Length: 255
Image 1 (spheres, rainbow, N blue to C red):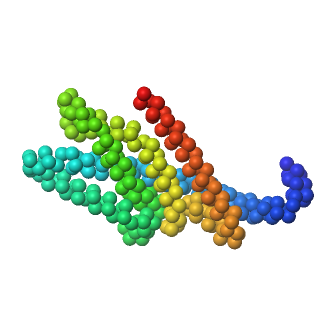
Image 2 (cartoon, rainbow, N blue to C red):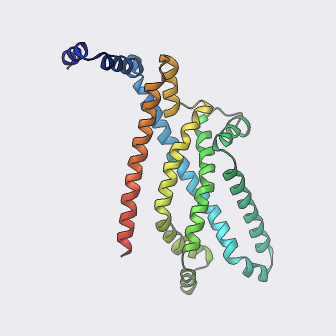
Image 3 (tube, rainbow, N blue to C red):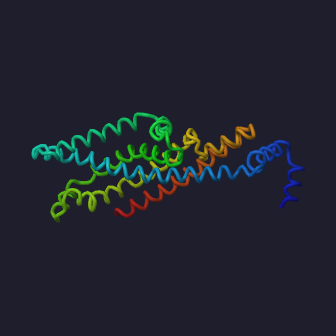
């Protein structure tokens, strides 16, 4: 194989030789391709756990918001501490959504790293928390829309079999909501995957940072950055294809 490549290289046009030299410089020498592999692993790790955190936050915020919208008038008539607590929780949830969706994710990441967790240098955990909190704001609205789209008759069906409001949400409404919003939730995963490209701002060797490190060592920007872009593109295309298959399967299961 090595002999074949040597013969090919010698007889190849100049532009092919230049391409091979650039490829060797950027990826083969010093095993720099491993930097991209390690960066990809870090990107997927941060994205996965951030999505889990975002889903947990999103469920809580969505339940608070929908409970407020659906039951506020009833709670107001009854009065008591429940009405006050729900108003307060809804105000906190709306403030959270406004602040998180109204500020750039990179600014939130820097605030987390340099202000809130300034005494910690576990940059990976900080990034997961920052991206998870950011994702939670968008997931919350996805879930809220899904819950609100569930027919009110489902709530009444839950009450008719003896479930209280929380049991109705947990056993009847939320499972239906997840089925409705699952494709949109998967698209949020794809968006978050691309958003994690700013993790390098706090010294995390993610995929984008790995490409930039190669550029800094070789002083060749084209090949490492194009490689990073292609890796992101392939991953996004793969997940988009999987989401498409999931949507088709969900549509077939409805018939």
